[in-house]
Image 1 (tube, rainbow, N blue to C red):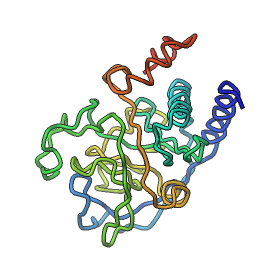
Image 2: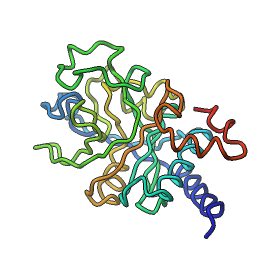
Image 3: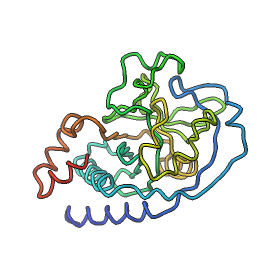
Length: 251
């Protein structure tokens, strides 16, 4: 199959994934900065579920698919399944090692815009973190699953800086995380301390089950830096294609 046809099939897969509803559920609290923490009273509330109407932006899906095709074709994913986090559209895309779409879901991200983790952020308590330090860093990460006693498996994207991908959690009722993740406004998805929160069923059925608990590569797209500053080889490939400048302009 030629690259253009392969890309078309991948785009179709994302379109189908975006059309599928996502089920929400509560889960116990994990301290995003240190990985472990006692469950809050709010987190022990009964589960609630609702369908998400968040469709995902066209530009975000397009750039994610281009990156997926590039990663698989160049083996940048090292033969591993991988995830792409689009911060601008607040959405996560999952792929197997061949670059086939496994699923997609809305996500909650760091409160502050920015593509760097502040130095030493992983050693701070939540109460010590200022609002502008609560960023989800951009880049390519070798992620590994880790068992958290009492909380199951989480996917550590950047263990040093305390960035994990895990089910959305009611850290406190005032944050309205379960409501925010269903909002069509990406800015409403900015609430975490840097971790990537996804719907519990997506985490269970795709991140845990489909990825089979293996290591994975996680690509986090930038929201303030140019694509060249984070993924230079990928950006150079896109720039060389017709319409590439227009596609990257949607970064």
